[in-house]
Length: 374
Image (cartoon, rainbow, N blue to C red):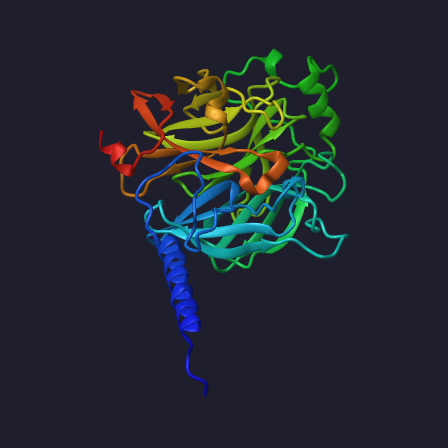
């Protein structure tokens, strides 16, 4: 065996220093939120879970989102839905791809399709984890407007794709008591563009684009999505196993182009935050409340305040996260989209502040969960 020469020893020493430095950086613990900044996971790689949602289970948070790749191709699903886990919300472990796209071009979730805003909920009766997402078929642009569903026995997956479709074919909306007759859809004589699109799609099911899911206190689950060419939001009841629709749904804020819905409940009152429709460009957020999940929903304007409020600080709502174990602690989760290089999308997490039943969201360069103690 040849003895080490001085240059070889020096090279080995420098290599050890570099590897130690990289390991230290990767394992550095984050202790605050930094909205809009790069957010490294346990491997030191920017978290790749865009348009995401959250599920809390047995002391851990699980973050599911769109896995992006570099460039414009990242706006399509090249790998699938990514999953991360955390015990403190600051530091995230890469759990891998939870739902993989298919290499079969005939599959609904073929590689290169558009698969957006995945959300996962747990069904206590079936003991299944159920993932819903907005799906556009390969090479069809945004014409399909479908809801997709997949299930898994383990929270991190792998999830098995079940089907995609347009919800509630042949079903007319549910109307809250007291709804005037002239506000109900009449397919014999549609009163506006939204009603005309609703009636057009009635036989085959309603369009389903930007979406979220919400499980109520009684265990019933709801699918909330942009419909009617994004002119209207639908609040639709899911079946007992959470993998289909019951046919009961209501229409919200008809004719006003709302997308990016995010729903939560506080003190028996339902809240929803969404956005306008301006493509990839950010716009002013909007919020609503209702005493019943099916409505009527009351529009309240923009919840954001301060500089940048008119464009939601450059982001768009994707989910509202209740912080486990803390009263009135809700985090507004938004994404700052970068369509020319999708993988560089950033996350804007901000605390929601309550004044009675009103809400306010203000910009913060950095903040911690101690904010909720205030």
